[in-house]
Every structure is written in structure tokens, then in C-alpha cells.
Image (tube, rainbow, N blue to C red; front, side):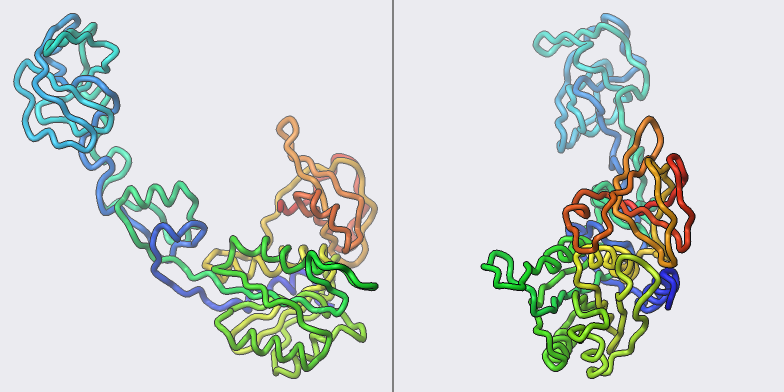
Length: 397
């Protein structure tokens, strides 16, 4: 049986090279930059006032000096004239500094009577001024290629006057549920039925990573029907198909023969992990097919460990493995068996230390324990028993 690391490597190696697309900046959140973005203007594009007050020539202002207000400059306005010698200009935050001025005195240090203003203190050259290009100058790099764009990146790139940018395309994902025991959400359950929740679970997990996630519904337990549904999905514009159920070796686990009927190449089937051992990855015509177990916890874990890393790499991220962190164990753990165990757990920061508490539930159909978790605690293959305070590896969720 493959190790988990081998299965993950096969998954990442199967992802094609990312494709560059041009998008509006408004649609670029969480996308990965395909090209470095530079500033098409300086920020600020002119010397600007940082406060409401008066634009002055610093050398001509002393404490208790009185001056005539020559004109006013508002944000978005153009001074259009030079500050006359010995006079000042009323100015507001963000407004361009008029020629001849080299400082701004805040309005709290000024008393105005008509067109005459008296200052309670002098001025220093450059005070309360945002110099042109102080944030960035024309041509400066705003974000490097390979950056995953956060809201702050979007704001920065917008300030650089970039309306469109080059990013990597996110894949289109489709979901297909299998199993005659599944009933639609909200329906009256018949004997032997359970509610089919995996599609909504996976859609919620994958939506932020993919261009779109479409639910293809439920396919009956028949090799021909499954082959027809899968073939139809792969004939559309999707890049990745994720199925749940039918991944094991029972009489009603029919996805493997259905994929064989379609001529799909099996990249791996089963790896030494728990939960999620029966997960399978296949490919057909450049598209990936993830066959995940039907138990919700197993589906969640295998989607977290295989599907999401594949989508992230498809979208241009540099993904070489799992983003694990170290944490101190609270409590104890028994020795692990031959499969890597991804335990549900709770991660917290306590007095400056990262602490993880395992959830003592290993049933792969137990969803309430999954909802209570915010991390997966990783126990290596044949790992020893662990006592309180042991250093362990954790995958935050």
C-alpha cells in the first residue's frame, strides 16, 4: 500500500502547469499573480496635506504670527496658483500642497478671524506633509508574481492605478454523490436512508479555492449509470471531478469499475492513512477525478489533504506538502498503528504557547466531532504513545 506521502506526491505531480488569465482587479481576491505588478502612478501622486489646517512657508511663520488667507485647497482640487509671499492657504487632508508652501500647520494651532489667521506656534519644513511617492513611486513593484492576493494587496494594486492584472486560472470543480442510501436534504427518510450531506460539505470547503463548484447531484449504484454520469461530467468544461462514496471494495462500491469502463488512468488507490484509506485518484483527458470515501469525516479529511492542495497548485500556488505547525499536546495519546492518523483536534494559543487537544472520537461518520474541531493532529505511522506536553505536528483547518 502507498504511504500517505507517496499519495500526496502523486496528486501534486498530476496537476498541470497553471494557465495565465487576465482579470479585473475586482475579481482578483485570493488569486495568485502570474506577473509582477508595478505602479502606474506614484502614491501620493503629489505632495499632499496630512491634516486639516493651513499651508505655509515655514521660514515665514513664527509663534503668534498673523497672516492673510490667500485661497483654499480641498481634497481633489487643484491649487492653480502659487502661495503669495507672507500669506497662507486653507488646506484640507489629502489636498495637494500649493507651490510655495513647504509645511502645514494643523487647524488646532490656529485661530481665524475673517481672512486673518494667527498661529500659536511656528512651523518646521515638511511637517504634516505626505511627500509625493512616499508610499510608492511610479514603476515600483507592488506585488511579486506568485503572490496570493489578500484584500490589502487589492487596495495597494488599485492605488497603483491597475484596473486589470494577470493571474493564474482557478480550476472548475464538480461534485457527484453516489450511494442508494442517500436521501435529499429536507426529504422524509425512508427505512435504511441517510441524508446526503457530503455535497454541501465539499462545496463549502472548495468554493473559495476554485473558480466554481457545481453539484451534479446523485448517481445510482450502477456501473453503467456511474460511467454515464462521470463521462457526462468530464465532457463539460470542468477540470476536477470529486465523487463521494463507492471508493472501497464492497459489492456496492462501483466507482473503480465505472472509471475503468471509461478508460481512466488510475494514479493511486488506497494509502496508509486514517481516516480515508480508500481514496482514489484517476485522470482522463487531462482532468482529475478524486474518488473520496462516503463517510463525511473521511470525505472531509481526504478533501483537505488531497483535493485542496491540488486545487491550490492548479491555481498557481507553490504547494509541495501540507502546511503543518508544531504544537504542545494537552493530554495523552496512545501509540499509533501502521497508518498515518489525522485526528480531529482543537488548537489554541495559551500564554504564548500553541496547544492542541485531541478529540477522542475516531468514527469516520461522526460529524459533530468534526464540527467541533479546528485542526487535524498528525500521528505518524507506528508512532509511540505520547504524554502531556509532547511536541506534535498539526494541520490548522
